[in-house]
Image 1 (cartoon, each protein chain N blue to C red):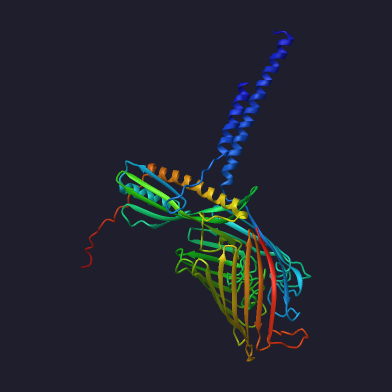
Image 2: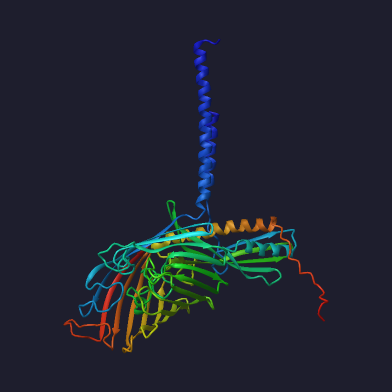
Length: 193
Length: 365
């Protein structure tokens, strides 16, 4: 009996791990989907910014730095590749682009992902899938009935990605120690004068 | 010594415990395998994609006048092709294998086993077959049989806005088998260079004798331009052939896109060639409906002192999309002032113009 209880428990845990409930992102004042979070920290502003820039560098395949010149802010653009899957086969069907903003203020920081836009992919002459256009369709746009289910799936995938991204980012800010680059040592050249 | 019945009971208990342990171990193994399977699904799966297309074309002279490479059969519900592509990436290496079947996918676009285009001869049905290796984020090398890097239009109906093809497309290469390296200086600039077989062939009979290069620039968001160069001498040819080609497109507004293709091909020793340009304005009224035009001028260079001949062509196409399905209604008007293409009227008298209507359905998956 104990054995069957153990087996049942294991199966239940595994089913929990497979069942991932995702809630849709909220909208901001302008009606755009947004993932927004504010967190407190004991780290210095310099350390936070270094770690944020390091996170973007480490994940350069999905996110690219747009601006990091401001002392307490970082802006980047990213993309989520959407795959169309059937059984074990899959291919990219499009991407959802987004903007990422990060700001530091006193002992707090905030970040948000917004401007989610879907760009469909198309096969190029070499058999690779590439963006078919540079113009994205905002996820806030209401789809046609025939496309409603697919569009809702895009929104959910963006929501799930944003939540996962946030966890990875916060973990990186908290746990990743990044040493600042030292300025090169100045040398006096006395051979020519 | 225990009584026999007790021994049997103990034997059963022991074996039942052993069985429970085996089942528990097997369950744990299955769960861990499922976990590994979930992890493996996050790695690059095999990608399979493709398209099918069919069309109806009607030339108003009741003769298939316009020498478009596809959509060439008059007054017939005809086949394009079924196209299947496989792609997989493992780490830095990837491969693409693309097969095609049907008139567009066989004798109209790829050579048969003899290097010709005889519909009666079997072919390999291969549009793309190559391996790619990304040495770094910036540098990749590719080897195999690939769709050409030259030109604006391609063989696949999915990637073309118009269903009929331009004279520039028909005159240029379709495939370039070879070895090439591509270096991305940045998101805005990249350079490709390589050595290639003769145009369109699986086997090069005079050695790998073509050199090609491509410069890509993306000056601003939404605008990309490719300058292509390909030169060499094909087997059996008495002259070197060199093509310089510009392919560019600019998404000027959210709805309006402008494309341009310009090319010049020449054979040495006054061997002829061609030059021309085509403009592709497109307007997307909605995500499901767009109108696009193609205005083309091509000049065929006379060989050995023969006169040149030029043709102008105007094509208007619609793209009506519903999921993976695209309907392409199209009208086309060609003017051949030098009577080069051999247009005829319905009574087979010579004509210097031709016009056709076509309706195509393309499904991509």
